[in-house]
Length: 197
Image (tube, rainbow, N blue to C red; front, side, top):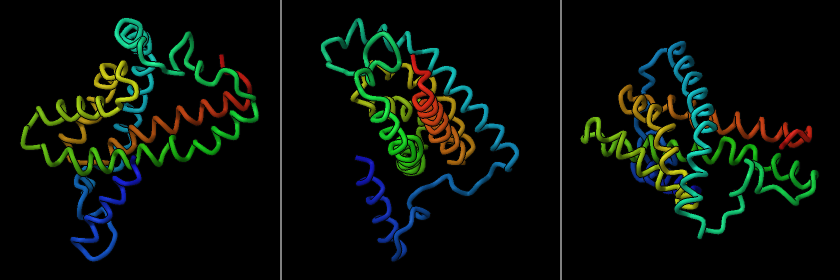
């Protein structure tokens, strides 16, 4: 689903400039925040996103158990790694190593360019309502796990608000793909070392 979005953005760039580019179709790319401040902001948001998303797993489980048990989902269960039960160690390692650059970085990066760079600026006329509405829409977009919508709103809103407020997409690029890459790398190392619960 994300590849067509990326190609669509590139196509729009080509229509505007004659070459495939994201520069003319995505906004908030002028780098208004200094290097030191952006690094500190991203580091703080990665910590926020990681800690809060893990802390909200019980909320996700509560919502799932009360409203979504009718949805068959392999990841639902007693631990965060229920979905990998039954696979051999070598299958898990190979799968994680293949997926690491994709789900750990590339796909979240495409989401950032499309959602934060393309869509968010186009609703910025809603003022402070733009990051709130946008965060709700982005959370609902994860339709395959509707029980996580509330927790996604909570841990994504600060980063989205800062991108909207500061007009610097690097904030959410660092936060979202950064935290995904961190968690995917830790998960891959844990599986390689055999320390998953």
